[in-house]
Length: 518
Image (cartoon, rainbow, N blue to C red; front, side, top):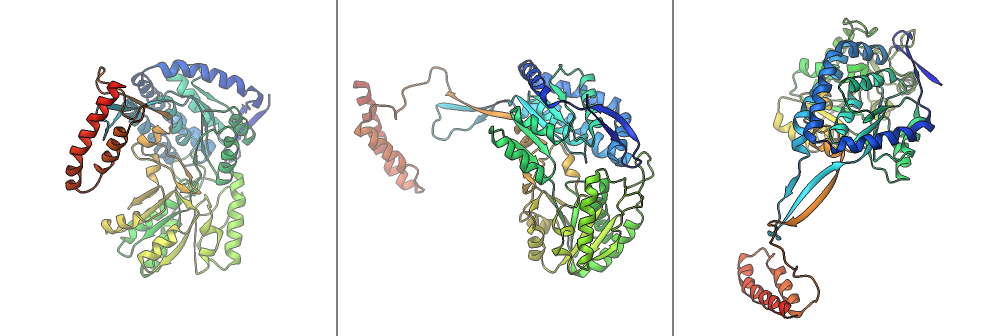
């Protein structure tokens, strides 16, 4: 059986040899999933939500082990593994355990004209969904999709990134320990080839988080079977720093927003738009703070930035940095790989040519921030929107009302005011992007609705109150006149409505009498 050897990105030391899932075995996985899903979906929403509380308990009991696993295989500092992945996951479990039964309960639709009828929205599971996960948040991102899929009544085929499969298996372990029925969650291990094979099995929906290029391939393959997809494809997020901003606060926000998880965050602050009046003091203070960051192996609580997780990403860094240097972009600090090629020094770039470089326009996914300036609010908005991505943007200012005005003009899925990045982990708020950042939402009620079908049920308001509809056959002249007069009742003028109503009522009664004789 072929295997994959997962390694610590900081040291290269092996963690575990893991068997790859043969693509030809996937039909068996899906058959088991479809069988298990029927039993799982028949369970009450309240009972499925209770399983999330059991899962939360299992998560907490193994938190230290999970933190070590994330730091070892992904490379992020233990503090970030705890806060950004484990605590955020516990919070998501709490939110969906508490709110899913209410969110997915039948919802009545108010009726305008047909007051004698009632309409309800009924939510029912998709079936078997595929969750294809990235390596940068190897626990939180797939775990969020998995728990939303499960509480909605679906079964899940889960493929973690081939860079972080060990963490993927840990998710399977804690779900098993929480007592989930067999086969409602199954984890498969492999590369892009396995992902393509999963799509060929016609899951009921695909939830993919990753690069734009791979997302387009997923969408193209899914289109062959009309399989719906939910895509979260990264960003090149802008922070707008207004001239009234507190510089200490603004630079600290920019520091964490751009350097958290060594910048390997889809919502990372990669473009910083600073008002020209405060550019120099902002850059100097941010540079001082960058110089104090500590890089090193993640299995210690004495570092701020871990190593580069993916070897492929190093090529992106090198290409973008080389291009920027060829265009005389100013490197305020950083821009160098360590001698062992495991770390990229925290990097700040600026200069008149910066906006014409890939470091400013394309996703870097590393500890790099590009600074440019603006003179007016309109220029800041235009520069922020002038990018093919649209995931998140942030605004730093003391003027909240002005920030809200700006926020409503930014072409992104989320805008944070005086905050950065972290809403991606909130259970209550939707997460997702526009433009090349993808489409669909996760988290919140909006995210949960992505995991269900919607069925509309239309019925009499009172069981015995039903009669032949006045638009049924046979058509009569009175019928036509009645409906033509009905149209006048939609006019804006109440005088016209009052003038029309007696004629409408008389014709409608004549129609009823005629209908009874026919």
